[in-house]
Image 1: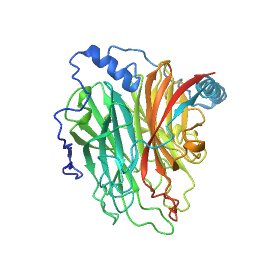
Image 2 (image 1 turned 90 degrees about the vertical axis):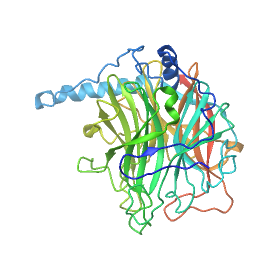
Image 3 (image 1 turned 45 degrees about the vertical axis):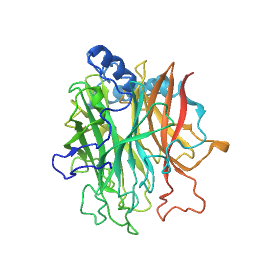
Length: 424
């Protein structure tokens, strides 16, 4: 039986319990040459290790004095228009193959005891093996009693559960800061030669007529693999502490939701991250937004880019963006949107300025198996501007209704679509 160990607020070791001596399909990579190709295939970060040194040009720094406001405004507008032209208006993601049924569900082998299914996370491909890190909504309270899990597949269609990385307390009194755990996102740190695991921990309590409290005061935790190297993706992981949360340094657009998502990515010699929040202290909730944060190292300290926040990618709803750097140096982020049967995406020429959002239809016609498409799990390169994209979605269940706040408790499942980058 897979179990997780000790989940207090101090230093916590995530010990994945597994009956296997090694992850299937993962081979040792003793030479840096093999690490180079592996890291490139996972993240497309050409500067992931010293073998690749392709610096991204820095964003122009505009002087903030009165006699240069006009020049700054004109130059800034020109840069934004250039960014949109380079990426957002001349490229799009198109679906080349949509799989017309879910590929991992609560009925799949290994999913016993998972009452409400899967939601969010990330999929990576490493040495021919697909690694799924996801949130399992194992029981009641819904969206509170959770596990963070690691699954693997050789063919994208058949999955094996490897380990439980963490389990939430399920406390529903609002007191436990780790009552609900969400969104496990592995990111490789070439500086330390170790995987980092970022995830969200929430307090949880019953909703009121004025506030949505099921998940509130989200805090971003960072855990580090005890096993060095790319093959250490399976952990075990040890908590290194909270790296971002709602506090006195928060921007005005951040609300009771706390920090609901966080994905870091490299830009030149710095790290940037897209993070999200919402004012869930007032129902109905009008906006779910994202902003930028930056840090000199993956471990931090992380500082909000207040002058750029929140981003204007979507007008009303954007959540859980995951960033990929393309071979031409352009960045693309895929994210959860409220567009029916679709996921959202946005481009950036520099990792800082992001274009208005576009939408990719992942289900259509007779292939619509979900009542609600939710979260993309990142783009996986498949060669020649082609990608594999996994996403989570709530299945259609006859007679099932959403609750008063629109929350769908139908089982969450894993979907699949093949995607091509179309350059116009």
